Length: 177
Image (cartoon, rainbow, N blue to C red; front, side):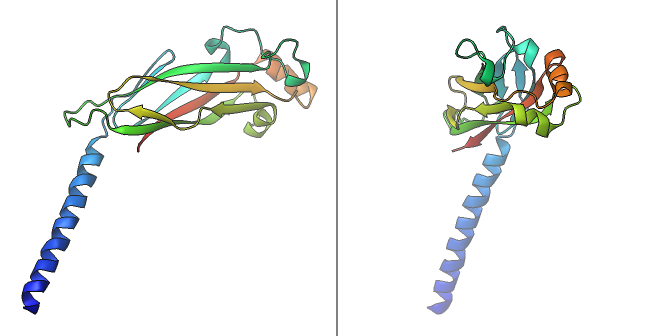
């Protein structure tokens, strides 16, 4: 009797382990490389992240930003970039409709020879909170906001801001919910 219970226990453990391994294999296979950026449209392949570089002068048609302290009209210090983000699969796993969330992170800030610390002392970069997205579902709009919050600390920094191009990378990542 003890031997029979031991065998049943081992079989149940084996079944649970195999089902977990099967799911892990399935989830890892949702990892295609179909990622594209076209203008402000982002297509994220299965389980991938997409990084796009934003050169601020090229992405906005608005007038130049001014520090918050010197705005004349509301919004003179702010620019919002809207991206259309889609999550697609290139395999035939029939995973359409899988729920996920998309988030954006910032990196590689550049403006003349300024350091990241000097840039972040003047500008704030924010992204929408985690936003629901469905695999092979409709694209979602995702906003990135840049605010020229503080004036340059020195004349030398001002010269680089006035004559330079602010650029940074935005990485969009989808996580299965």
